[in-house]
Length: 345
Length: 166
Image 1 (cartoon, each protein chain N blue to C red):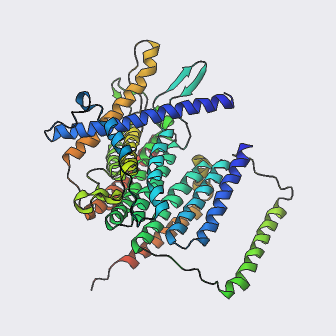
Image 2: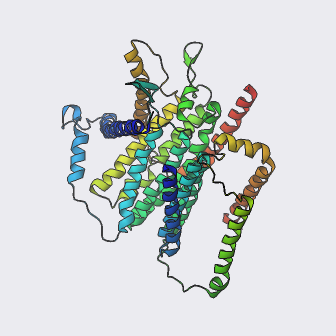
Image 3: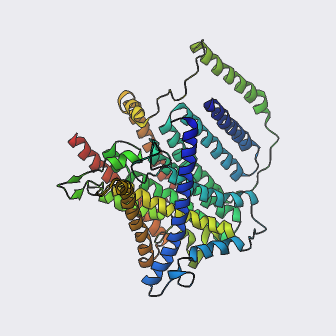
């Protein structure tokens, strides 16, 4: 593949991935409102379009046309930088996420992924660790009590849960022997006895899976870990002073992060796009993507289900939970997994 | 070609960030400049092929450590600092010492490798596998000693932070 083909191919992939991601983000918002509505015995959005399906579009238009207020006492540069940083990092993470095997179009074969780097997982961890700044700077530059408290909570919570998150992935890495997400998925191909898939979840990583899910919910500031934006105490937390499109950027970043977390959970623990293949060749290209989307949808559903079910933690419980429960569990999981891997080899 | 271009872009960012770190009056601005320096260094590691080191640089330094810096500055709500006029000791001893250090460093590099062969792009050890080989085979003892040292530091921090109960 020469350079110009490479660049054109990359641009096409980036455009498609961004378009799909942003659509998924918009409809995750719709899905959440609809599902939470039904959980709480009401209808959710139902007026704009059939089943309220055009609601995300209407919301988007509303955000664009709303007055963009910059409060007088903010640090202007950082106030502007924070939502940009949040959204761009949230969108960048999708670059290393593979959604299927290889395809062959017009004589060029390419992976269904923007770029396959052999430190894919570390790149995502790096992006999440930088993403803390978006939240921290938003709160600090707003120059408001609620924002500052919200961002202090967010920063300490994200740093603490990142430790448990990183440690929970080590078991998976030991089974795969690689940081490349593609290799991790390939290591989970096949089945035992013809029916039980060789997912990392069934290889004994269910403790790690539980830790990952808890830590990921905390990283994305979702219920029951949404203390940084607890509206009963902090108005809206770190984005209290933001309005219009700047607020929408935080909102989109949060949902894009949810999608990334859902993708990562499917890739690491539920075998990625592995699944039964049948039918004509055209369908066989499409099926892995379908199996992968199904898993991602399951995790997004879980997000909303948890939000509709669980109340919020108290702050000291939240910090105690990661340092006293998740961290020791993750360390124990690493020791047991490494023992198993060492004994088997 | 594009590698050289990228090298100079990252280098320019690193140097500009370092100068800005000193020039800024506000602690947050300085901390953010330091993050830019660390991020650019990660880019340089990546250019050398040391992908694992680059990722760890971002996760540990630009991520975890600098977040704690920023967090502390935010928590204390530190205001703007004033530029001091500079100490005489720094002017008399510091600047010549820095120049001497630079000259010595350059001399050692040239003396060890008179042909001045540049390191090829991507030629360094850098994959997680290579680093693990070095760390857990050749340098196992220093690695373990370092980890004990860090453990002691953690315990020291706990002792200092613990409230006295009387």
